[in-house]
Image (cartoon, rainbow, N blue to C red; front, side):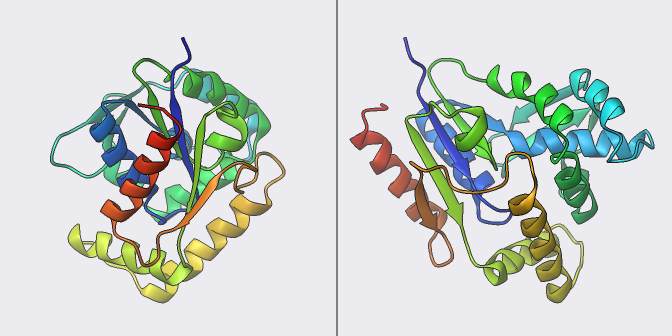
Length: 226
């Protein structure tokens, strides 16, 4: 029996996390936040003073990461634990994001995490959030979404998230950080960020979470995924 998979790829700040959590809860499917895996590896490297270009060391770390995920009702996204510590908030920092982008360019690190990502495929189905879910990890997925939004809108969303958490930053710096992350992700030699050839592209700039989710669910229903 084929297990249905919906992949949602796209740049940071497009709303993938919120959309995927909503979809997984609505469908009762499992959820994979692959970006968290790379951020966890990057944070582990930072904590253990391993350079983000030390491919042999990162490959070993990727294979042995002590991690746990948990979705908590009433909260956005999922919580992540690294070596027994809840590091969810730390993973969202721009520094960890940029480090994760560098780590994601290393073929050995990506290969080590590939099997861990594919192990998330279980009945009744999987919603996979990332940057290469539809192009590399789950190329057989029957529904692939490429979710995007303008740089300015993504920076505004990030700014509001930080304010809600009592943190601060400036919009210009966030815009530059997002542009730098996009540049790195879209031009890396291994699995660059791009829509899969058969992906449905959705621009969420002027859309609500409910509107995006409904469009995805309508498409999934048309394809007989539930």
